[in-house]
Length: 253
Ligand code: SF4
Image (tube, rainbow, N blue to C red; front, side, top):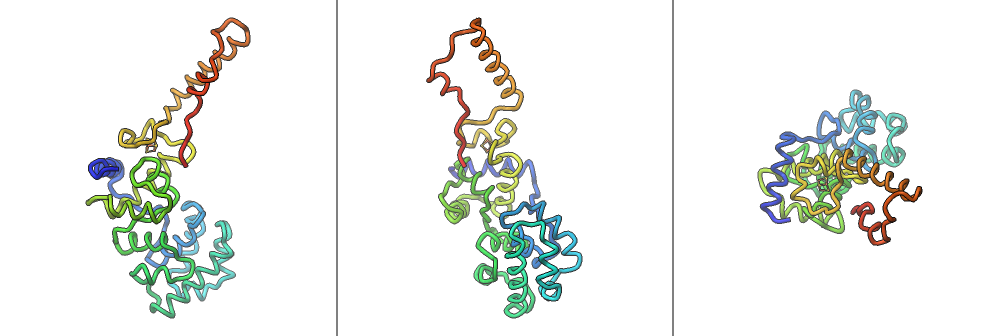
């Protein structure tokens, strides 16, 4: 997408939500780091349910190590991959104590060196805890960037690099939040809600989804057409090519 269109794209998302934030609940940089590690392949809502009680008791790496792996496993057992995540959180807490005096480091290299911390997690922490203009590419950001033509790429790293080049000020810090929220609530994976999308005219996705009313009306007409054909009183059946042209549009991942 060209820079002027990208500016307008984010201007509209910013108008809808002037102060976007992560939906993960946390009380400091350490609990944010833990919450992001726990959110891998899990929803923010499911993580919040588990961490709400956990973060009342545990707010520092030292408290986490004292809490222990068994208690942690029990506390987060409703989150997917809780066995591996428990091990990683205890290991990363120990590493924070041994290598960083119990503080969350502020560089990407040091963050990515911690157990269970990858590039996306480092980006979220650098952005939300330390105010850096990073672009964390999760499944929603990857989909929206590709589907809309904003910053297409074959891998999260490619999308991140394109966003980094493209996104103008004053939207750079919050861009990934807007894209996550847009993907989560409007540009959904299975059925993007194009009929109520504020950036529809800037988006290159062609088979735009019609509103529920329009789709219901089209379904009623199709159903009337089928029953009329069965009773022999309706119009002649559509040809194969006509049928194809009316079929549901292919959706990009
Ligand atoms: S128009 Fe549809 S596909 Fe394009 S960004 Fe909006 S919801 Fe997504």
